[in-house]
Length: 329
Image: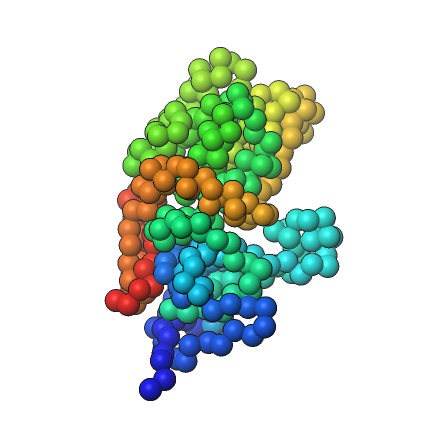
């Protein structure tokens, strides 16, 4: 009797089906991954509701995933560049003009089995699956900290305590920076206390930051919400000669005074995905498991993905990271 494999297929915005079919056979240069767990993020919610600009339908979503290859646990770097465009030739495939991301433009991890290019597998180094699944968002946070060139002794402010903000805060603190994290949701800030100071509001954040930095402003501000007013606030708060890293996503415009950019001689950089940070992310999880373990707030089964997305979308004050267990349910 032929063994079957389940997969969740997003047929169109708002339409998902749990399907079964033969276990896929990997071509040369690829491996068959027995998926154990998949983390959901905002991109997955936007693919499902039809607002993600790059999604391709039908699609098996899920770009944060971990599983077994020949008995060894692996995390998956979901991004593959074309190798030919300008950013790819500069070693920055995360900015590829024709990027392929598993779970967005190619089948992802919401399945029992998925075929993955062998070059996109990174050893989980024995981490349990429920921690290893966080490697992808942590790699994004590490990349943001790398883009900001955060150094030991820097004062760093992270705006937004979602998974990426928490990841950036942990990565900055791990480098020896002093970190303040701001968010309006108290439950999110509770998860940041282990590595940094926290502030519960954004309305009076400028005052809190001035007190935190002795009036000088932070060397680096990581903006992890994408809210235009907070990007503007980051520019206002950052120290002269400082750096603002924008990792939050929005299609809205931001109004900035040109004089601020030259007067403070600011560096403003974007940060997209990750670029080679997966091994460092696995290492950081291995060293700080007690911090990242609390980021997973809810777990659902593979047959419950629509319910998981609906719950997370309706309860942002309760949800930090939703994980889908791909073990039989």
